[in-house]
Image (cartoon, rainbow, N blue to C red):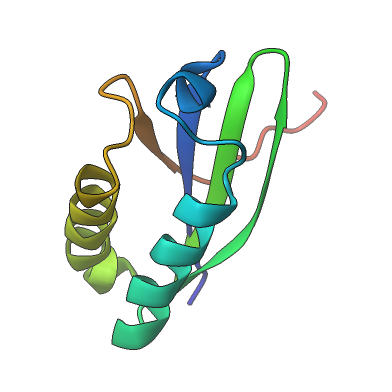
Length: 97
């Protein structure tokens, strides 16, 4: 079974405005809670002019709701910006023709 890809998105400088110098503190907290439950892992992330993202792989579809609850509660505990988005990506493949 394929991992479920989730992206936590902080638009613009909202993370900086919330007092964070980088995504590392949030990244580590999310990694800890997901790995403790063995339902997912932080797989990367990045940043640029448009904002900052944290990439998360959820191991099984049936664990998605639990993982989402953990992600939300962790972000709330860390006082993440209210505008933070959690995006679940689906795999859609299109041919060239």
